[in-house]
Length: 427
Ligand SMILES: [Zn+2]
Image (cartoon, rainbow, N blue to C red):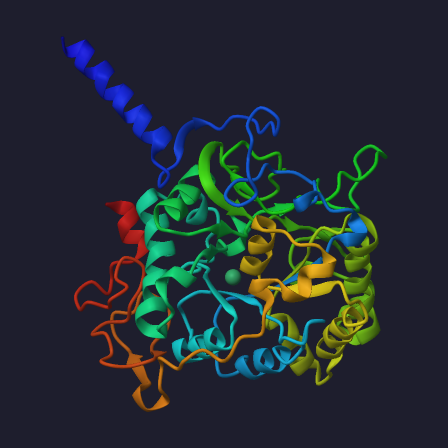
């Protein structure tokens, strides 16, 4: 009798897992076979180098995906504002994705970026630097705190609408396997953009063979074919959860770099020559544009440009802008954020129709829900979870939380200020 009850309960659980679209489907995800397991682009796509929509390469828009990580501050905001003035061939200003984390983040400036039409995504609360002991040993609770508390703070302190925060990038690209995707799926996220690929690029070859080409964004309904160069690969099925692969660039030494900051050049020429910066970006872009037409991901940090300040030059700023100007010579090249790219994959249109594609339209500046008169700069100098004697947190409106908000305590409730990730782990 007991055995039957257990079996019935197990069956119930199994069917709940299969039909429950919110949680993952436990057990190894099946291989994606487009003929036997039809996926429609709108909510499900096999990991594949096939062009969405089946367009010929010459009719496929070329996307350049632009993102910046970490805190938005008074010192880097003017740079982002200036960059935003670049326009796509349809005359609309370009949109980028900002993967933001909590420390030093000016929530009022994040709101400004949001109003300008940029995408605001999460990049964890703590961004702790201990990869080996921290990011590789995360419990589900820790993932939940890092991912959802950041979302909560963007909603509460930056007035970003909850349903517009759909993306995540894990610090150090340390992909967290099934647990990380489980938390993303259960908390209303639509995509992850943390997962570098070396094997699926337009340039890398193994044993002298042909390059495999680039993976377009895909979902984790079925087992991914992507190589895992950093972190742990998810093996369960995560219905409707998109992955935007970070296709490795090839630096001027021939070595792979998933983010621009990691690209290195002989004799520091990326610090001394704007032409070298342009060459690096143009060469990698061209492998897509004249090759597989898959998106060219240009992922970086504002800190990469600070080398200019240290060296009292404008090399990186100039080279980067020269590259964006180079792109303007192509009517089929669009600079987009990650969500815009995924929206296109869900509903692809060809080059002839890309100028009118809904998510790429100009739109007006969004209403200000973070009026300057209400902004408040909160200051904290006790019981801090980070190694600082004082921290500021500029938010849209008061009152300031009683304690500095952190993982496990996004509301900044007094007495919970020391509820740091380390303590969670010991519980
Ligand atoms: Zn980061």
